[in-house]
Length: 270
Image (cartoon, rainbow, N blue to C red; front, side, top):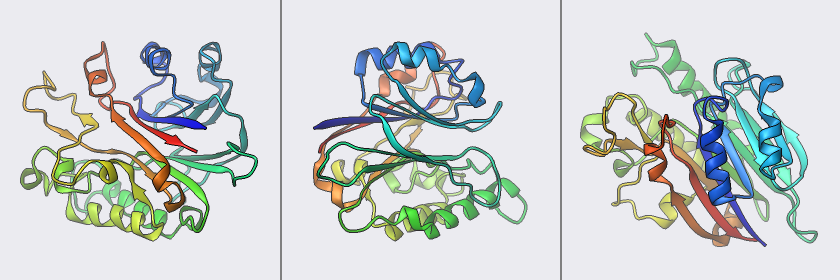
């Protein structure tokens, strides 16, 4: 079975539902994970997704902020929501799907990690302190430690660009939130604790630039190409050799009224 999965911080699903529909009609992934839906569950555009052929939808939303969703052609066996830092703010949802009667379920975690504000000092910036604590709790979270033949995937806007060439200028961004050494180390600690495989960096050498986000502050995002790789797809060791393709749809950043993030897609042979 071939399975295609996309993660995308959509920055308001209702505002950009036409862009999502455009993407789904063109790319037809089996599963779409959204972050920053900014939409309470009872206002989510369910009918539009179902008309597009996506019958199975798991939601963890809230009005105006955050929010994550999994939109799928495949039915869910289970769904679950976890809270971190004792704050109920719609930053996680997980589902499991059955892809093969002879294999364990495929477990998918969809995250929106706190952005962390502008000042990289937890002593004076509560948002940055929250982000560091959130990453620490992810590291300690037992369900994020797949082992053996467990087929797990972790995706989302993790709001950290952990490697030198995940940002347009390593030197200039060392003191900028999303690429500070403490954030990078904490995210990589989550990766190591769960023995995860970072699909992008498994397939694209570390000395090559990869970005998934470009700031709205730039009048033209293509000038200087000042991006960061904030959106991630990780797989457990059991799935490492099943990945056959990985793509970042850079062109989506130039769509009309776009998100500042673009879709990131992985294809597996299961």
